Length: 375
Ligand code: TRH
Image (cartoon, rainbow, N blue to C red; front, top):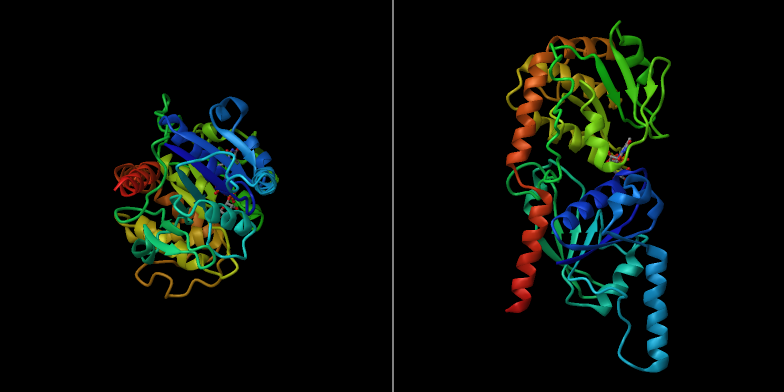
């Protein structure tokens, strides 16, 4: 099959990270993939040249111009209509929306007008919110073009599009830290947004504990932390394996921390509509299943404080003891339940591996489109 991925970089690395991961895996499974990106340099940074092999990375501006130029010359020659330089079987649009407010709306509409029948999949952000299940794989007609798109909701468990996990390498030295993980968190890894209370975490470090921050300029540094080198996307899992406890962020590193099978804190991406609290709690209520109240309360307190979500009132998760209202206490409480959290992280990883796999789900969708078109 031949896919064209429309990759719009909203900010940071995650949009490009997801698109690159998806593209690499589709390519590995034998499909042809073009990635059209508005900031190709972000993808080039994430995937080194060797790993880009086989993928065609196209600058979105250039791509848009080439359609337009074609359209003019076609008019002049009055032969046929405008057409795409490449003719994929499917368009995948991660983090897209049908809104005309987005920077890619003109390009989207142009393609939809030229190819009204081209199967198009809008892939939404990852969410554990229950409502996403009722929208997964539904269709909607674009009011401007009449083109019908399908909507895909990544998520956790049945009824969702799942997460990408088929690309998880069978790490030879799986969990380098496992052998000595005697229920202690010695090596901490931080890949977070600038606002997190990193200095407070720094102050909690005891002798024998180390803190490494990710090799991304936006991740803050602290007095005691050291900086990791920026690694390519396919090596990111290996990097995570070097640590006992992971502070991750956004979407892709959040998922890879779960697939690393390690205890973690999620620094959620704050959105303008302030939906992050609800999204964080929706995920946590799934993740906590099987944890003791003590462990769940300690972990959620730490997540809450790391994200600076404000007052923890009794309504946050009414049944949990969340009495740790400063980072030092929450971190101490988390360390006290370290063995439980470590075991739980392994079980959760297995749960994800047993659940829907995003690339496979997309291929199933694509195969269904082909069948429908043949009929
Ligand atoms: O970078 P992020 O914050 O990304 C996103 C975007 O901001 C996006 O707009 C928003 O919608 C989303 O978060 C929720 O965090 P994320 O998703 O974890 O992406 C980081 C990517 O960078 C991930 O694919 C892993 C990769 N990476 C490496 O490949 N090597 C590295 O050394 C590091 C530090 C990261």
